[in-house]
Image 1 (cartoon, rainbow, N blue to C red):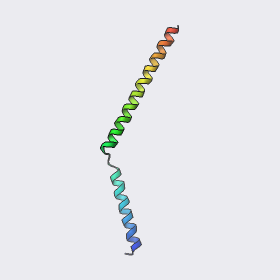
Image 2: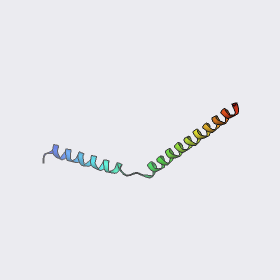
Image 3: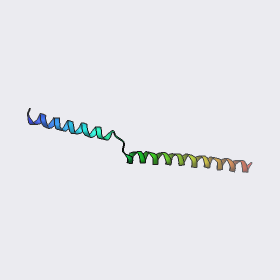
Image 4: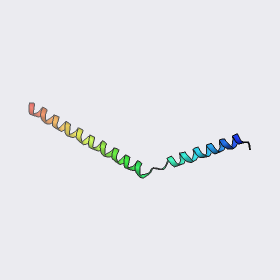
Length: 62
């Protein structure tokens, strides 16, 4: 084998190992997803509360 082929094979192997390592989800990724879900849920609850307040104001104006 010449050195170019050997170097290319080493790069491909390193890239493959890097991609395989990226597929696993660690604790930081799980925590980040949990925070994202909590923020989305809180945003939905705030939006619902805002709608209820708007409806109450509209009813009070009648």
